[in-house]
Length: 148
Image (cartoon, rainbow, N blue to C red):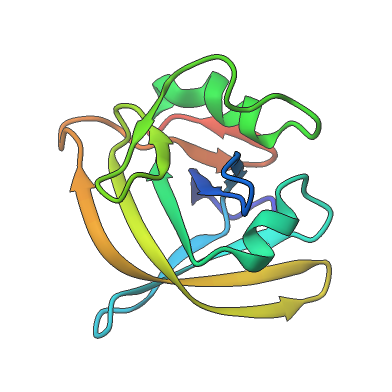
């Protein structure tokens, strides 16, 4: 699967204790237009797993190459993902990546166990689009890449 190029997103929520949680994902796609559903896959071993296993809402930020350090930070187990800035709030008040190509505010629609991951399906409740002229970040062969 490392030979399949995929976009990169950061997924965030607020835990039951109000503490922000998040992770980087390249397993993200549209599921349905009516209703608007997306899916993202979360490793069951992720630091943020417990928060996402019970959250009612989450946000997805679609990243551009300038966000690579932030994507790496959110992909690092044990890192303080929210300490170094680069974040803002979505229209619904969830943490999001500042300057993302797109932000999706989602209501949790379903969770499905899938091996060592959980498939998290969200119903898109609100969107905010960034600049249309920027290039998306791509993950390919275990590295962040640029589109030529």
